[in-house]
Image (cartoon, rainbow, N blue to C red; front, side, top):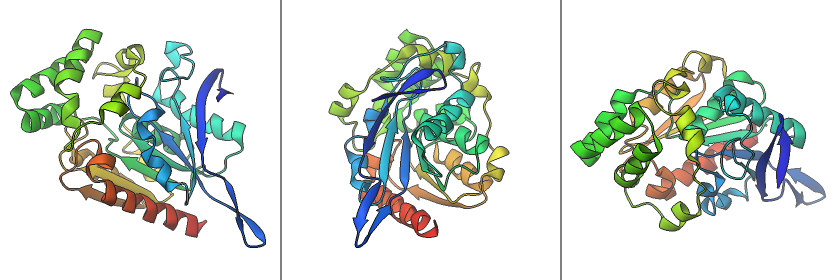
Length: 285
């Protein structure tokens, strides 16, 4: 479905019931809002595997403006502030109070934007394979260490000055290094890829290189789960550890022998962490 939020129609999908029978009562489950990576990807990267959590929570998937099946809107609004405020607006329209926000990679940037701009509006924050501030030199070094000098050079060339042609070379050489177990070809084929939003955001001269949530994270009071992959080249695990240091109530977990796709590379460990955290937040509500 498409829901109008802040002047654009956002594509939203919902999995699982929000109210379930529990003896003589109807019990309300928490809502988990899943924020996808990119920019230039869509929510399909979470399907179907994230659905295994619907016994614990209702899952709301959303494509960010400019991404996937959502309206593009004015490119001037392709900013982390707007993407974060869109999540607040979506909650207003749907009447969602204090959701659990889950953001991976770029989705983690949006999650931090929402959490720092609206710190009292979420009950829990899950940040997976993401950063509060990007260290590009650490990224280039990680690609070279994991994939060799060519991968390091291709990563440096693309991220330093993104173009559609360099993005394709990056997809060919560097994207396979995101996973230790191998990227799922069906998932990659299903994903809607939009280059314009990536060109607008990516790189040190764009907002990708300017944002810094580290200081503002200190004012996010809710429990937080931070997950990093030991062999992640695009979000080196040191960046995840840095996030955890700035959050007042964080649980940090480094998953060994896992890359950027920690949910596939270390599936059992990843979903054990997710389930335990959602249970903890739900019990505290």
